[in-house]
Length: 189
Image (cartoon, rainbow, N blue to C red; front, side, top):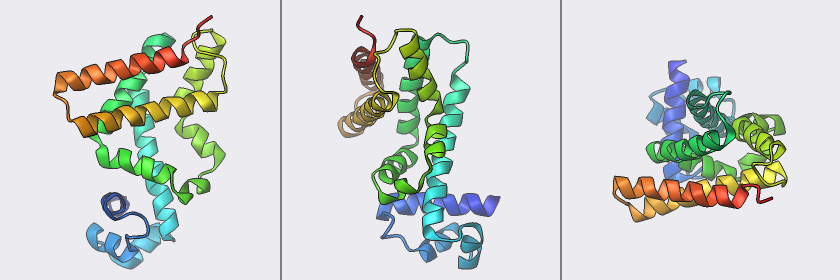
């Protein structure tokens, strides 16, 4: 398992720096400290490596969000908690967050099954669905609301990365971003 982690770590760094097409598998193997044959033993093709890396990062983020939420939490604080912690995770894991965005706008994203996409977004899908049922969130398609949510996460992330605010200003930006997103999605009667 250690070799697979080495390969994924090297692939992450290289794909973020040079892109998918600009990163030969031989360079991934070299940076991972493994033979080409070892890389291809674990990942039959470069495409398989790219997809597996995405799934690994998304599963890491989902596990992190699962740890900080509880089923018994009320929807409103849970929504805020997930939103703010997703941003803090992204800021602490910039290469991984960049990779998620890079992958999701690439042709590789079409290789992800609908079940896997649903699994990756399960926490927010369930939360949005529950929020709509309880008339806390607008009655709109869940996919649309999730897309707006994710786009705003990325926008606030970009703002923070580009403006490099002091820690208290960063926290204020995260909270202001949450307030704007909540106001956009909340049920207005």
